[in-house]
Image (cartoon, rainbow, N blue to C red; front, top):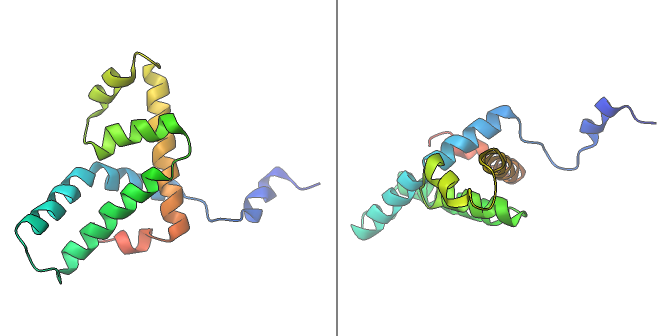
Amino acid sequence: MVAESDVDQFSLFPEANAADIVRTRYLLSRYMKLKADVEGFETNNLSEGSEILKEAIKVKSNIEKAADLIIDNDTRRIIDFRFLKGNNRKTTILRFKSIMSESTIDRYIEKGIESIAQTFKLWDEFESYKSC
């Protein structure tokens, strides 16, 4: 019989820790700024060789991919509305309160952030996001 505390060491994939989740929350909160920066660079035909532009494009793209990989449909819809469409918490609550409670919406937001953090950890992307 395996003790419950020993189960973590048998994990097939690396687990996101609290710092990873905080970092993911920060990246998601900056998503609209990253998106605007990328669109601004592209609109003004600024240098494609810019390291800052390359990093912003990579982070933006990875956030979108990781959000698309969220398995639970409700969680994915809420994360998309809240972060990828740039709505604040209040607007998100108002949008979804007819189908679920405020605390459920908050749980889905947390679940979505954890899912994206887990995906980033699996992709080993946190080290490359130090400059964001």
